[in-house]
Image (cartoon, rainbow, N blue to C red; front, side, top):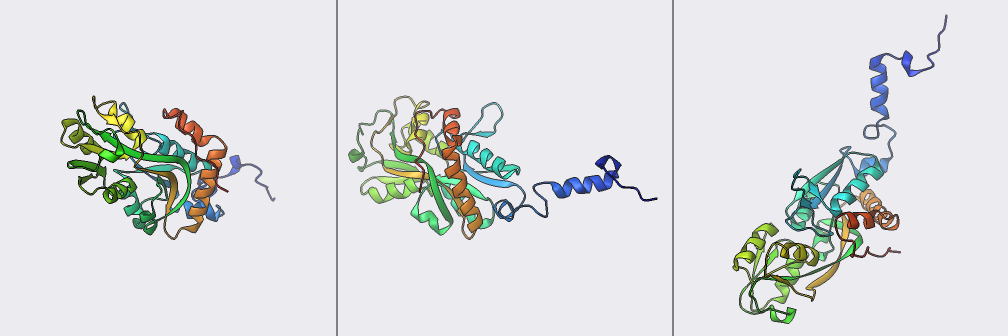
Length: 273
């Protein structure tokens, strides 16, 4: 006599396990090709820069857990959730390191200040915030304006960044020292061995809280956008990432990320047409 199996309860444990495995979003044979292109390992790998001071670009470490936290972390979580895949944060010391790792299949998407030099390594999408850089000057310095920065002394910047390249072009008389990590530069600034440090304004304001007597200049060294980026030759990822950022700006995801990270006064970049 023929019997019909009408429920999963009648299936053997082995067959049930196989069906569950094939139905998972990571391994499904019929998963959307875009998902497989964007997260080819089954996990969305998002590259972030982790430093000592928070900004709409820089992530910091939670003092209790040691885990990265900040705007880019929240955007990474939202991106993975949108794809229904697990998230893996790939941490770097600065945006230059992120761009250099793009050709090594180390990450799938990232967020960093727009920079023409980086277009050799990554494709850049729309911005989620306007990002300004300026100088933090040491305690006791008489530098009060951007026009007074280029004189004898040592200025600092984070190596491989758009800000460091802009500063290098602008200095004629001052010496420029670059650092892989902001912590090292901040330490020298606090000791008075570095006259001024160029970085994103938001991060410098946060950094100045722990360096009494230091001062953030009002004038920007440069103004750009923090954009979503993907490694070269990944058009499906590039197109999806652009749609994700525009959607995240429209549905309040970016706004909530700013607010939860302490940047309620920072405006979200306008939508791109």
